[in-house]
Amino acid sequence: MPALDIELVPLLKDNYAYLLRDPASGATGVVDPSEAGPVLAAAAAKGWQITHVLNTHHHWDHTGGNLEIQRATGCTVVGPAPDRDRVPGIDMAVDEGERFRLGAAEAEIIFIPGHTRGHIAFWFEASRALFCGDTLFALGCGRMFEGTPAQMWSSLGKLRRLPGETRVFCGHEYTQANARFARTVDPGNAALAARAERIDALRAEGKPTIPSTMAEECATNPFLRADDPAIAAAVGLPATDPVAVFAEIRRRKDNF
Ligand SMILES: [Zn+2]
Image 1 (tube, rainbow, N blue to C red):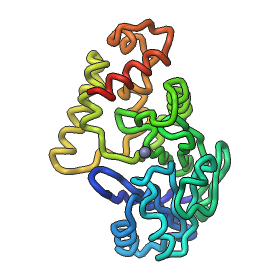
Image 2: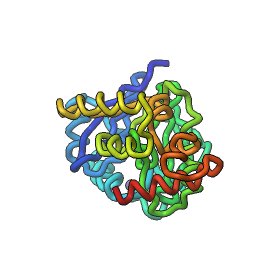
Image 3: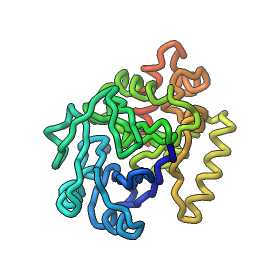
Image 4: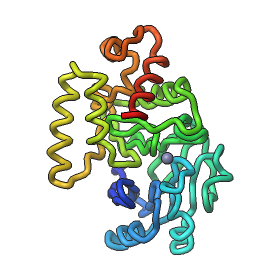
């Protein structure tokens, strides 16, 4: 089965939506459209007909374009079941472990609460693509607006178990600032230092840093590495309690 065609669409100040097209059927989804205009224009430029909106969570900067895209295209809006009351225009509510089909392409729904209580990811295994909204960022993770450190650490643990080759398509271009913070809690990590240099070079050219891979994130993202003794030592906590280490680095990032 051919992989999804994936097109990144920059929105607002630092949001990314993604257009996904199943080449076999022409079915086309858009992940987390904060606004409609640029998404409809990008789809038209490619000659793609939007059939689905895929929402990872209810925040307005991920769903603000839902209704206008739905009106313009008649598409089906897919979103997290626990947030069915908060996702504009939702037609199909999906939950942990369910399968969502975009034409011939199939995604597994992974329930990853913490940033919001109903947050989900869409994992298209055959296309090696994960759409994880505001839970996992390149070199970072989302703020815990509606969850606890234990919940967020558990959600990130689910993502960490995906194959290393999985491409990570997250909701925002926060990578350069995340890299600056990451180096304060993982100063001895050579892979992180090298990645930070690559990120600076990409941003200097105005290029996106997305997607990364899960292997890169596992090696360099401190929020996936709270059980690494070096990070625990850097924040002065015992390595035996990754939830406490995770909570501490999240707290430091909130104030960075
Ligand atoms: Zn959000």
